[in-house]
Image 1 (cartoon, rainbow, N blue to C red):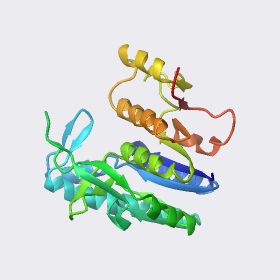
Image 2 (cartoon, one colour):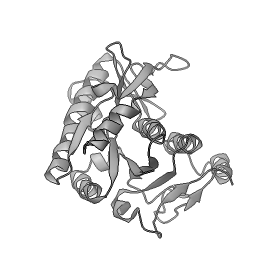
Image 3 (tube, rainbow, N blue to C red):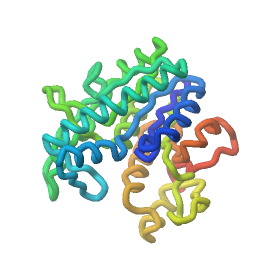
Image 4 (cartoon, rainbow, N blue to C red):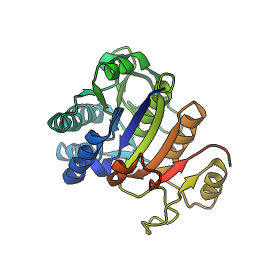
Length: 263
């Protein structure tokens, strides 16, 4: 099987123009087939504030009402996505920007209301592996925004970490798939105030221990849950690391946190 890199960049990279440019230079130089998935950063919240819209969050997740859905469609699918695509084109990386609706790439259902109503937030139900494979085999590099659709004309705001995991699982049927989460830290840390407290290897046993001790918490938990789920469904490798280290991904002394199954 041919290698495929599914690379997700977080909001802190997107929010910093110089960091984003540096990352995209490293990304464009990475050889082989690859898919880039980006988050939304703070830009949507900043625009909403300018428009006088209330930004509502619950445990780090955005509550998306109709007005906020309009904002994230503009910002994620337009401003951020096309800025990334245009920069990659300048680096001779023939990229194509997508939301889940384009080519019917990612379908989702509106999240059911339980203890909280997240509004127009989608839970992924299907990834169109053939459409993405066709793009890759014809020399295109997909850049996917954190937006999906329900197949009936409704766009949905969807967590980018989850999209990355679901895309990696779907593509694992035809490629040796590596799921790489790039963000501003060197990896998963035992102390958020110590940049060098990286956990080099995270398995199911020590993950459970870190959760019980509240060493790992908040936004890192869904990222890691997605990582373990992807490995169980056939993804070859999952690594969480600092975006600046992308060029070292193929080196044996790679710095970051590698996620594995078992003990």
